[in-house]
Image (cartoon, rainbow, N blue to C red; front, side, top):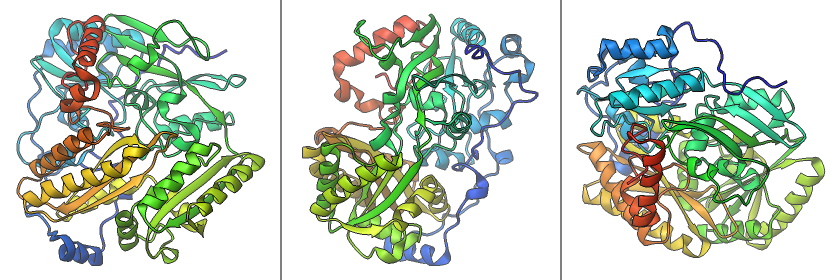
Length: 545
């Protein structure tokens, strides 16, 4: 019999910390400092020089004092237990925000920093409901917390007129509570990280197959709350494609959504909460489509003479169907920079043009057939095969790019990413417009920049564009990036793009939401929030304009 999906494990003996470093991405043991040659190249090309002054240690960071009273903390402890609530700075600091470049630059400040006033680790849905009821009554905002990987301000402790802010850490919802091997569905706790979920499924011969760059640290609940899209999306779909059901605790009650493989019973309420970013409720478990662990994997890299030729090739593959599990294309600039900064893409075989990566998974017969069909299509479209080494090298380092961003920030570079998506017919225009907007905004502030782009998610009708921006920090680097980000957002909306393809909205993209969904669409979201969260305590200042 499956275990109770509404119950959590026993309470922790002490408040555990998030697995990520408080002032950088991921595991500090995996940090990758830049070589002296790369630093010299950055200075020569972009004028990057080390910033003066050492960043503070965790003990030196000055946090805004907690606004919660002793009575508040006692009341919360009575709900979740004294070992599952803390107002200590050591617990507040790691949950003070996400991992965007502005987030990490703020962590380096010696000025007073904002942070949640306390951290609570509930273990059951009943405890979450009680915490939400107390916070509604006491006007305390609640920010659900999973892996801490947001890069759009989704975890910022926005007070928005509330008396205090609570971080609701969901790591104790960490069980595989059911696996229907016949139907191919698994029910996973919202607090499971990507690796934890895959380990539990692999023990039963199954895989979810959702591998975003945040895979090592992000959680099942976070994937659902942000409409995440993984690097294997060409084969397995986005995370929202995998969702078959979910449970959500709101201040107004609990929702258990999703019946059967499909339904005509009105609008699909699952899709209202998938992508809701913690503003409408707290996702506690997700029922997901899973598949047997692939028996065979084939890797092959390709080179195209230019981005337009490569993009047309990817479109041909996707529109014919039965393509690879992974299908991605770097533009000329990104291919060249990767060659200059790392040997991890099988560099000796790639001298110019654009690198494309394909990976196929499944049974031997399935993968061989899809590989033959795709290979011929790419050849017909002007591609040159490079063998498996560059594709294997990409796969080996697929989760490591954020560590490079940390090293670049350390040496005085400004490095950040943004993403969008559009129809194939708009893609070239959108890419050019966003690149020009980023370079123009930074140049206006005296910064020479390098803008790289790749396609990482493809659809029959269009594709995503993922931009990486590199330049020298000038003056206030947060303001410097915000000016560039604002220009890019305007260019996206003016050229047929969506303001976000998979990073979510948070605070960063909220200003463009009225253009994205219209004023009436925004009013619909506000009406839903007023129904499920009458006091408005859930993640205020995010998503809903």
